[in-house]
Amino acid sequence: MSVNDVIMDAMIENKVGFVTTVPCKQLAGVIEKIEQSDAMIHVPSNREDEGMGLCAGAFMGGRRPAIIMQNTAIGVTINALATLIQYYRIPLPMLISYRGEIGEPVACQVEMAVHTKALLDRMAIPTYHFHEEEDADELPAILNHAYMARKPVAVLMDAAFWKGY
Amino acid sequence: MIRSDVLKTLIPLISDELVVTNIGLPSQEMHLLDDQPTNFYMLGTMGLASSIGLGLAMAQPKKVIAIDGDGSVLMNLGTLPTIANNQVPNFILLIIDNGSYGSTGDQTTYAGMRTSLADVARACGCDHVVECAAEDTAAAVKDALAAEQTTVIVSKCESGNIKVPVIELDPVMIKERFMASVAG
Image (cartoon, rainbow over the protein chains, first blue to last red):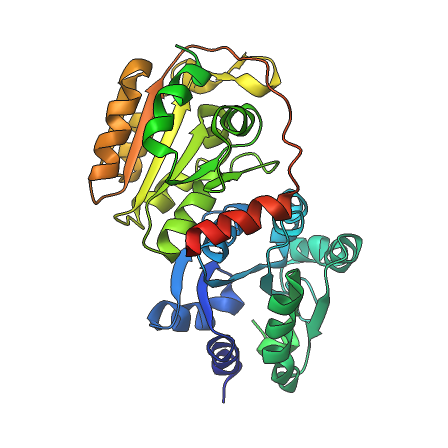
């Protein structure tokens, strides 16, 4: 099974009902599957903090939300994470393409990669790093953990996990 | 009329509806004038009231009114194409456009200068955009509540604020009682 199918199955198993996405090349396959799925509402957002607002509303409307984005988004979502998602205790799995790791062809991506884990750590956001394909086997439990704890949770999926760019 | 005058005229119409209110004075004024469990007060995160309202409207069938400000919409201008491309029958975005950042000292916004948010909303693809004078806002909201379509209302009012206390409710309390209203 492809990692895209593993991610989709994990979301369906956890009854994720609302997904917002800001694309990344590595996320193209999973975004396509989300768009085609009848199990969840898909709303592309223009910026990731906007997406977190959409997710907060969807959660209060009774749907389990998730956001799919690139790690550069951590730079534009710190305020939304602190003052909306964490402050109101809204569960939010963040499935993140971890650009700028080994194998990255674009030097500028490394500049946010070096801050990604430090920022997530500083925000006390539980963070999981997928490097091998089988790491995704833990995704259903991670999603469940986010909804149980009512917290944002980050899943960083690097180039090795996606088998390149 | 200033924003608080407009809000007073809306209370008989929206008291029992699901309302998401923008950070700062809009939330504080609604809290002072008509605190309801059906009000979701934003205590921070400027710009996201319309996004929260849209997500809520898409997730469930009850009507949702997001009361936003011109400065906040300008901060999250990307919200208008998202609203335009995800039109649902139960969402109303009411932009109280006083042309100023009311919560921070009434500095002029670009909506108070050359930029028309109603024109921006139309250009983004919103099909039902109403610009009205402050005193006509209640009628516009009444029409929007009766219609089964996404409506963006731009209410042009004067800049100015009343003295209001900060909201001391705990955010989790605001969320929990709001969610109980949504589900009830």
